[in-house]
Length: 174
Image 1: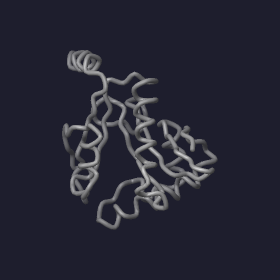
Image 2: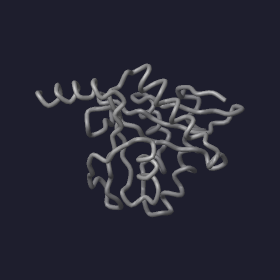
Image 3: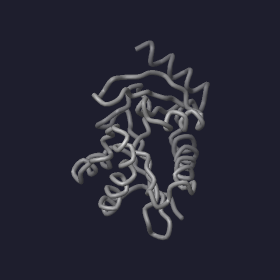
C-alpha cells in the first residue's frame, strides 16, 4: 500500500475511478464535475492542484485533491479546499478512503503545509456526506447555489487555532 501524488500516466485509471465512484451520486440526481470529467479537464486539474492517490498492489484505490487559493479553481474562503474525494467501488467500506484522508490531513495539510485550516464543499441534499465530514471534525461555514440541482454547503476544519486566528485577523484587515 502506498500514498503518492498523481502523475500524467495515472490519468486513465484516475478518470475511471472518478466516473465509477461518482456514479452513485449522479444516480441521486446530484451532479458533481468529477462524475463526467474528461481527460483534458483532468490534465488541467492535476497541473494546478495536488492530487493524492492511495494504491494497493498497483491498483488505484482512492484519491483526494487539494485545490489551492492561487490555483485555477480556488475554494471560496481563501484556504486550500479539498475535493474529488473518491474510492473505487471495489474497495468501498474497507477504510481505504479514510486511510488516504487521514494521511493527507496529517502528513500534507498539517505537517508539510502547516495549514491553519482547510475547507470543502458538498451537496446539501446528499444523504451522508455532510454527516461524514462533521464526524471528521469539519464545521459548516456557509452555502451557495452554484448549480441547478443542489445547494453547496461549505465546511471548514481548523488545525491550528492560533495560526487560524492570526490568518483571519490579517485577511479581514485587507
